[in-house]
Length: 308
Image (cartoon, rainbow, N blue to C red; front, top):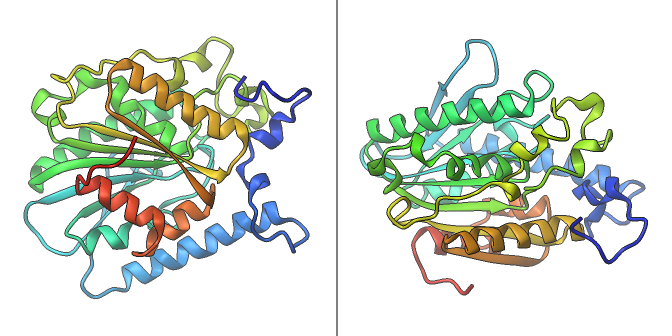
């Protein structure tokens, strides 16, 4: 669907980002090594962060009682500040807050409050149920933003997390006009937005843990949604759809098509393909103040004009 140039395309490979890294090629199974490296690197970033004496952490729950509806909020100073919400990937089936804090350090150093949320995974919930829980999280996080006097709120999602944060734009009436005016930037990083191919792949969706069928998959595919992009709804919003050179053609073209879809709907959208990055180090390097991804994120958040 998104890679029509190839015949007899291997869809499983297309939908496994680890198969496209240019790193660890001297190892027996670079696709497995890159995944393990991601977990090691990002967990170290988390440990470094929570051990900083000047960084405060709130361990909060936005729903449930004994599940993964959790959010950790990192900040340095009390009082009004901008807020960024980060949603991790893992094909809606794995990862957690410990592997999701690489983006936090540079932001809290610049006065941001950063909320890193976790969520219930499939098969504990179906994918439609997960999106319902994220909708409940949106109500919670906007309440939290008001209580903490957030000056603006932005969202970033990686991989499956990029898919999840699209729900914010899908349910605009859920959020009051005053709250929508605070929404500043959304970063869709290396996401997947059309699930009509991948839900049928047992390697991605074993035993249909997503709980989908040929009809319901359309309801959870942001590429197929209609959008309300009127300036009166989103007066301050800019969207950034980001992809990486060492992704599959399918992943890159889904991002490109999603950006085009949003732009045609009337949103202000920037699409950028980062050379040399893969699906994993584009997040790993967000910990580094001097990395290209960090510089891009900071410029976008602090409203430096970026090329389309």
